[in-house]
Length: 114
Length: 111
Image (cartoon, rainbow over all chains, first blue to last red; front, side, top):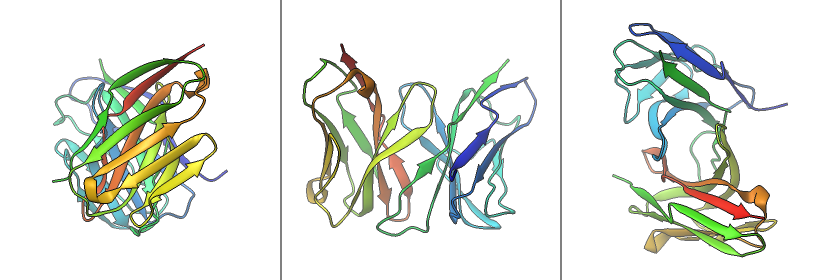
């Protein structure tokens, strides 16, 4: 099945820990994105990558880091510098930005600070 | 900077009703607009994509319209069913800003 796989589904982080969220896609999409979703708010863009080995900061990149070493993979690391990391994290992918670009999403990872 | 709003924030209707969800955006320079459905604790499922040159798209009981000049889109759901209960989000694919999302409309369809 073609799609986007996020893992784990649930993740617990202790204070001061770095954690990494996985996102893998087999849709052959060039572009990949990470969003954060908080209750009652829309999705906010953390980082995006239009091509392998290149990525840009979104609106709320502070305290997060990413890498894009392979086309299929775009892992997100939540660092200890992110003071309020508890949220639902969504990964998405799309073809290069044209008029017909449709975004596809994974099932999300819920991160909780304990 | 593009801003997307959705009205109403929440909606509760009896089964069988036709309903309309609204999405507004401030910058008409968009590639397209996409409507999504999100079930609790789940990811987003794409429902409809309307290109900037199109006026509407239909899929089954769903019809989405786009008026780019006025910065508005509506999602029309015909003959609503309890299984339609979810949060509906719209997103614009903005020139140079990637996808910008609205906060969503939480829909409850009562049996």
